Length: 111
Image 1 (cartoon, rainbow, N blue to C red):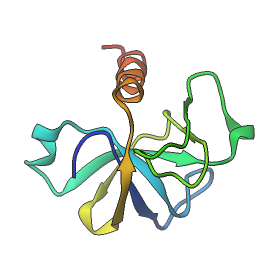
Image 2: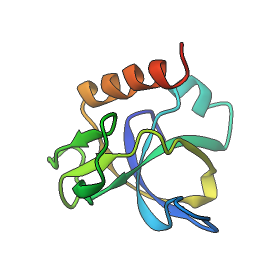
Image 3: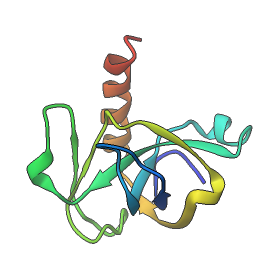
Image 4: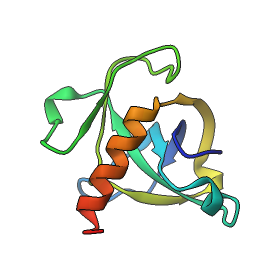
């Protein structure tokens, strides 16, 4: 697993507006942190573009990310999951998407 990869992840035991079921998610944790833990920090993706808000990031489907359709990174839904919830690697985002996520995280966490 590496930063910038998209994995199919099990979102179990969700409550309220949390994401549910299996869905693609982007690994946002640094590669050096990934090597130190079996818990990985992710941002979920949704194909429902009607739910896009200002800070969400559009990920256009391409051969590198191998998504089924254009999707939205729901950046305010940052979560960490145990490795056992990760089903399979789907693909990876381009560097500009990773940079947009990093820019958002600086705002989110006031860094």
